[in-house]
Image 1 (spheres, one colour):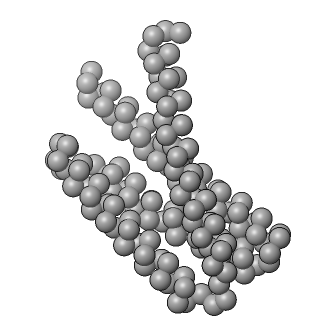
Image 2 (cartoon, one colour):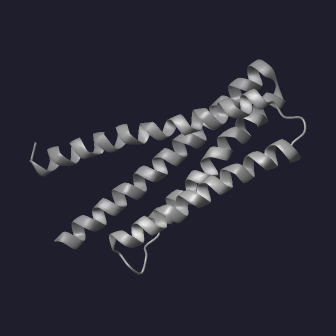
Image 3 (cartoon, one colour):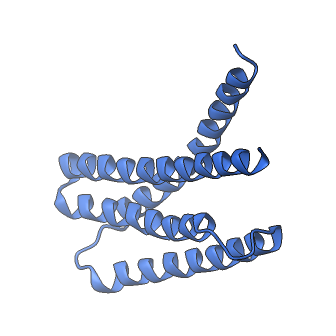
Amino acid sequence: MDAMAEEQSTVVRVNLMVKVLLAQLGLSVVLAMLFWGFKGYVSAYSALLGGLTCVIPNAFLALRLAVPRRDPGAGALVHAAYIGEVGKLALTVLMFVMAFTLVKPLAAMPLFVGFIGAQLVTFSGFLMRDKETKVKKRIDNGE
């Protein structure tokens, strides 16, 4: 019974990670369209690049945490989280360096608005998790 509950918990976590990543990507696209409408295509692709600079490293971290490991213990999870976070930071820095050196012309303000906007979506994951936890408790209690 514990194995089934643990497996369901893992599925809920992966679903939540996918929802947050898709929400980040969706917001990035919406911001790009808004910038395109008000400021032009340079601002639009800059905002989209900013959003992708957030989403891609977050996807790397999520993948590191979601992939099953040989050792299912807490130590292996902490190690995976550490490597994932270092990799996320390195990818973020690399993507910003690439954006500023390879993309010409680039609008810095929309780039950072896209990045910060996508980062703020991460907090919605906490709200989604709390909602799913409340629903699961109500189902378990037979309400």
